[in-house]
Length: 349
Image 1 (tube, rainbow, N blue to C red):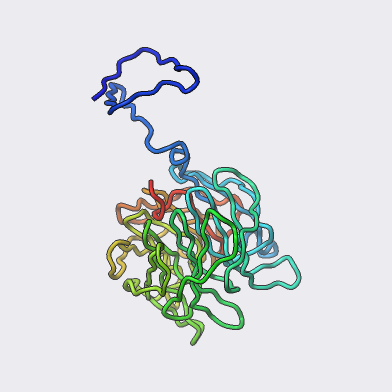
Image 2 (spheres, rainbow, N blue to C red):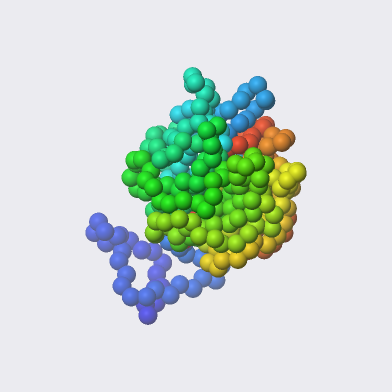
């Protein structure tokens, strides 16, 4: 053991002071040394692509905002996607955020897309092209760990999909096939993940359009293959596809729409063990099509549809209970967007 007692430390040559052996640190002033490397200590940022915002006449947007998850407050302008889009999915690792698929307006013709764009989370700025999904469609879901983003399903007027594809965060390029969901569906409830597993929840199936399901399925990031049954949600639900909430132990799932009405219910699951979800609590307002993001302690839910609103709620992941007010999205109405963070449950601390 090394005991260090000094008044000042001066650099040694150009490399600075170097200590060998274990170092014990004792403070009478409740000071805690920072943990992790400098990149890890700077994390805690959530991002939100606003989707369909403003007055009804304003329509879809390309705008991206950000929040600091550990502190409450309103969202702040980050940058823009390359085109106006909504009903898209998103995933992230500790440095990059991805936006995938969606419905694009503002160009001619308006259409469903397979585009993937990325941002560097730590620095504000506009998104850039990453590549393309293997399938075209709106309302996909995405789960991610620090190396891989896995995207599932989608919907176009031509039909629903059960395709799962993947990209590696470190290199830009087109997605490649991963496997399939057990059934064709879209607009799943938000995904959740640990460093090893991604879980896709609920959604609605094509026959008929309002056939919502309660199925939860999971994939293992390190391997490719079809999704495997995890359990069931507390109700058949869908329409909150954008974002992940939870830490590496517990996943949070906003239900959004449980026929015949919208809901404010939140479910949770224990990611490491398969089994049915349980009730967590309620958001502050009823609605669907919101984004979500999280750090290791707090889950945040942004925007809402029917009616559109700029509400931001948060919950404490480790304890069940109802959500509290976090702040507001910078634009008065926001829904059908996509959210993520650099510190969600799929990322090592």
